[in-house]
Image (tube, rainbow, N blue to C red; front, side, top):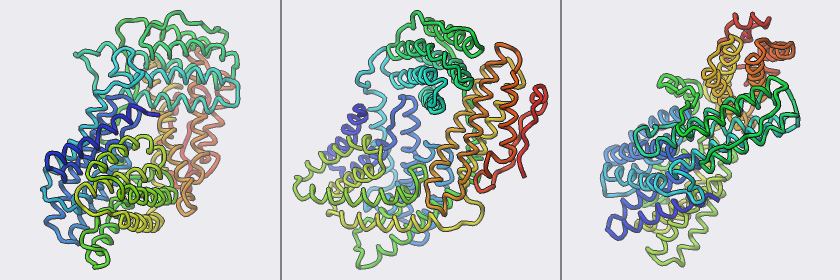
Length: 614
């Protein structure tokens, strides 16, 4: 149970609404509480520095969307307004393909634009935007200021970073325990996930000249010391040497030292009978030295994505495909909603902006398969609307509504574990905000709008579009392939730059994890969409084995200066499989040409360079 996030949720939307009611600014209080709810959805476990970007960037995008939507709704007729929202959907959808933070920013931009265009408020755009920023900023301030219960060792500002780095050492120990067993592959994947999380937790501005800088440098050094341990453990898992399991005590003691912000103390040394064990022993020694130093250093060993990389992703196949889908769903939703808004049956006080805003959440591919999230959204909305209708009949106003908003805000961090539960909680909260703003009970219209949005997204989500499908999967797979071969070329080039090697290794495993996740989501869609991702798992599995083998080669070269026939035969076999398409044709045989590794380092070992299949 994330009690710290629950506490922040309870102190965010409810108190903001109460303050607005007491000061006579109810409408702006509703906007601030809505922003706090959206920020609460993005309030995930991690470090405080990472939360600044994860919560702050979407909040800024939401404020901008609120301004654009407000002035568009006030000065444009139905057709130009719909065109404006459609263009926003195209841009926000394309940017959303960049990553999780960009996806959250794109979602809040469009939701806030729809709310600004359709919510009947008397305030102009800029006060609404300031209220939106105040709501999200209040939750972010709580995230930065409140200590995490039970994590007060050392400087509490770095409790998220300590937990993430400690999880890396635990994952290394878990992989060592699994060496030679059937769960070694799963433990290696868990180690990759732990390294990704720690890397994200430590990413951000460093406090160089302020209090806490020493503790921060120490955490960076501890993370850097885990990288050679992870490399040695992966090499041992590849070799299948079960005797490595006795060496897991050392990483577990290091994990405890990170959590307690203490020195590592004496560590049990493993044997040195094999190159992997010697690498593990050397890595433990370096880690012990890094832990015992009062001042740390270290680098994240990650390749930072440039503006050019981000633009390439947004304008590439994945960005274009997602942008068109979002634009169609958002534009069609706005068109249908405004057309119904003019009819007598729909009513002049209906919240037409709910329909396009709901479509934005439904069309997000990172929330699960399309049909699954549509069904969850429909079920969650019906449940939440019926629950609110029952509560609204007995709760006093406005005190009962404020209490309901506070309770729902506290439940948001828990409900984010399942889309239907998140929808139910958000529905109750939004309906409470609407009624607190002085409007009538709207449970029935909320259900109708959501079911209509579900139908629109299901239809648009399966409409064939020009060009090739599965752009997101192909883009992730292309990045993973390039990263894997860049890592292989560096290792076989026998470079002594270990920091560069660890950077390439991190990039390879991270992009592989992203490609596997994208392929898994695509494979769970209906056949009309899933067929475009056929073979992705086979290609990713082959690339993972290639990266594992490359890691084993790197460790072996460090301690012997040459490769064994087992290493070269495995590399040759994997490169041959990839040259044929990765045991399968890949995503609909629509793979992009990729750059092979340098031929010269491969020639030194007698391996043939990988070339893309026709």
